[in-house]
Length: 109
Length: 114
Image (cartoon, rainbow over all chains, first blue to last red; front, side):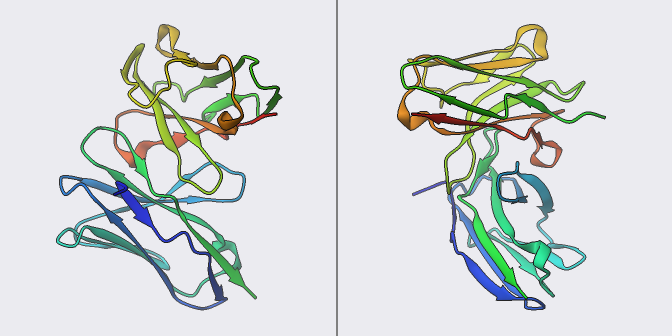
């Protein structure tokens, strides 16, 4: 089983739609979780950290479910500029980031 | 402030040739990482440095890959000899510590082995 698993997509949604991605992780001792965004042919950039209590940043909401070992990212009111690959990232306690394969999002007019 | 600088941006080489990538991290960042990203995949760690010391190189294919970080600043990653399967984007990242929210990635070197 991979350490971090994501549905690769693509998720095709119209502008204004709400879309959610899930990511599961295998190491129950993992302490830190993040969502990174990667545009085509660009480097990954931090989108948001994921806190145990859940957190929101504008149209983006991240949640952590430790019991089921998954994290989620919800995007409301999708914009064309949200089209990108969203990488789930976990620190499993080994002091290194472990990336999922990414979920590709395509927002269409 | 300059970000993480990598060079070259692109490299095309024939198989069995050597190749080297260079990374200049953000000033003051003591932790430096090299990741490899294959098409359609997430980045995978090759090696992590704490200052000059390679503290995690378990995923580095040591038969053909080598890395160094002299003086705890710039780093180079070398492949010799390159194989077709080494075609990928090689990303360098740096951070003050080891938490994911403090990572900054360079723009990467896209290697094509023909």
